[in-house]
Image 1 (cartoon, helix red, strand yellow):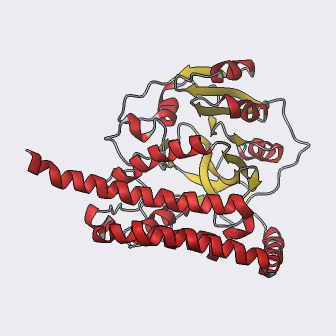
Image 2: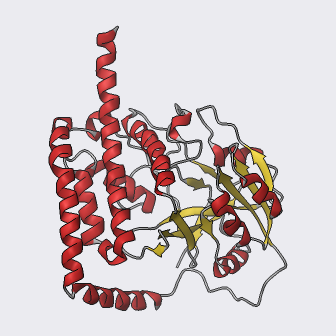
Image 3: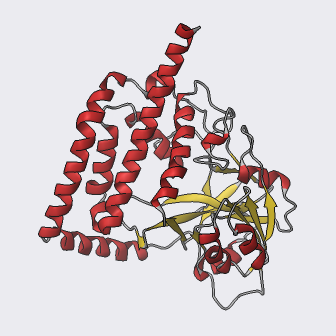
Length: 373
């Protein structure tokens, strides 16, 4: 199969009117739909534990997984015997108070020849942990605007390797993925690879609910950059790229091995981060014009473009957080992931509700500002 290509499209951006067409349903949504969501979750979880449908669905999933594994991938499986002493890839890890996760992440990438930890003035021992593993620590000071942390690293740091691997501190490279990366960078025809992010939530790998996604994590650093979806940003929107994606100039492929993402070990930290993310996303969705290199929403594009296309069409619907929860938890079998799956689906739908509420807040502020003056 030919390698995947990123095809340029003409951007079509959302207007604030298209995003939030039903603000008069806000009270109905908060007073009726959210309690109804909680009630449906409790009833569904109770019933599915009482009847045997869960085991039937598990068997269907395992059968489907077996069939999918028989489909040949676009890349040959790399040989474990063909290893060099180090992998000529520079790893970039953005951090802020990540001492709890960083040692696990760094311990899994000892074979990579260069590692940068781009820190945001952590107050814990993040920098000390990084140096103990031989990583190069640089500090990033964010005052708003663009670029953010990862793009700043791509623009600024003197990489010794052509290839760069972007990781988060709570992500883990498996030995199989490291082997595949070592083999993949030898292909002169490709400039980047997408890696599937497999989510581990409260110690459980989420296999259902439509969770996990592909992202451009491995690429030639002179051939890739982050799209900029919003230039007017401030520190309340996080100092790291939220849902911006790497765009590469050339052909890219997909790796077979996945990247392990330990999504949460503290709900307080998770909620704080997603509060910043929803600030950013609300403003992105309300802007009247986008940036020239932004990936446009497209039903038949890559996964990121499909998600944007769907979000554009469902976010303005009354009750969309409830529908999103039912889609992930019921239709995509998220209930089979047990309590972690339930919590993750609830938090994801709540995140969507926060975006809608903040869009309403921004619109309300814009309407009332002329009256104050």
